[in-house]
Amino acid sequence: MRVDEMLASNRPVFSVEFFPPKTEEGRESLFETVEVLRELQPAYFSVTYGAGGATREGTLETTRAIRDDYGVEAMAHLSCVGETRENLAELIDRIAAAGVENILALRGDPPRGEAEWKPHPQGLKYSVDLIELIRESYDFCIGAACFPEVHPEAADLEQDLSYLKRKVDAGASFLITQLFFDNQLYFDFVDEVRARGIDVPIIAGIMPITNFEQIKRFTSMCGASIPERLHEQLESHHDADDPEAVMDVGIAYATLQCADLLARGAPGIHFYTLNKSPATRAILSALRAARPWERSPASAPAPLRQEA
Image (cartoon, rainbow, N blue to C red):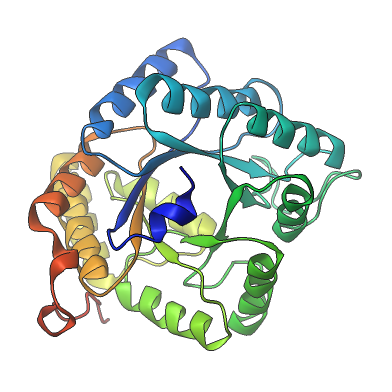
């Protein structure tokens, strides 16, 4: 089933992101996570893209296995990193031949150890180029990324939104946000996007915090911010050498964050899981029980926002 068809319903769309494993042990761990999380009936799982070699092959293999062996719809990520246009066209052909209907089209980050993005000499420069390449031959449901706190390489919000509109005009039918921890950033971003005539669904990307040092690395790389009071809570438990308390705070915060987003109209939540199930399982179980999307706007909670 296509993601755009899922989003056309009145129910929130829950999705979970994995990365393709590099070892047999990693593969076993990943599919144990898939087995656990599919019981909570996510709409689809997505699999990130690793440029080159076995990791790239793992994206398609894992996507196919999730859909065919575990009965959950799946979406393959595809990026321009390190690939020629010819190789990308071949990969798109193979994704179509496997029966996968959904692709998340990304430019991709610079390879590890490189600070600057450089396209392959015979490759594509931007994600919009990849969207256009996909559209040339196939009728995939195409998703794209967006950035509530502005893409780190964009000069400003205006430039970022101008480029986002190009992605949608080229054929992206839904957007998934970069991770964020202040819901007002999401809703302000949605307002800015709508003001520029972009009307596709914008799914909120949520990463439950389970490790303080890890989330600091991630946010420094992608330009996301951690609200001051949340940072203080995490830091105090980290300094006390209490990783379980860090995880407890992270899961509780993400649960409140997701409930607020859904009560105020977000069409879905995309969980960045890092191939682990406990945090996402706890959050999604609580959301299924509480069903915050059934609240009327008048009864929705106040915005989850942390002021300095």
